Image 1 (cartoon, rainbow, N blue to C red):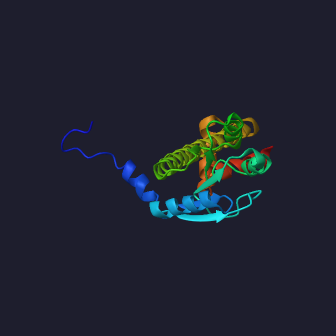
Image 2 (image 1 turned 180 degrees about the horizontal axis):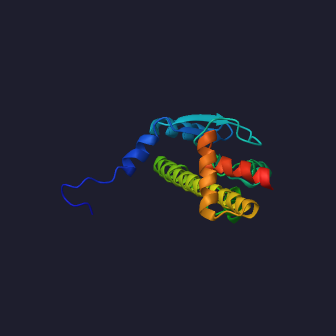
Image 3 (image 1 turned 60 degrees about the horizontal axis):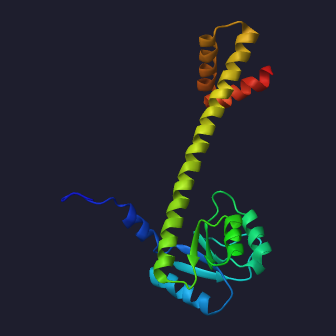
Length: 203
């Protein structure tokens, strides 16, 4: 519990605020369910668009994609899922829980969230919040991993360039590092770019 006088974390408020103008792509045929979903989404404050049939890949700007998971659309759903990348908008599937085949398709399609039929406003709101929050956390984690990979690549190149200089010129590791630093300053290049140039010259 939050102690008297303390503020609750702002995460929930931020997440709710993010729903305003959230771009939701509804991949659904025109019917009573889609009209209900579009109505709920607008009421929540989202900016929904509707498209059908299922595209082979997403060509519309969207933050979240909502689509029915149905066996007769298996091939189209899996084709769309295969076209998505780690940073593509997350999928929320509309499902009937009593159908085991549908649940299997949910797993194969990589849906981040599910909405049970009949669709209810609170269930839709909850899944939008959870799915979008999970996507943002994943995006942040991927950015951190790529940053670390970039640092490792830079360190590896500098180490390789130093080893080549040591072998070619018979200097110490410290002297090799100073030589790379000096050349980088002279050419106004990064250590990584300078190291790559040395590697290209001496390899």
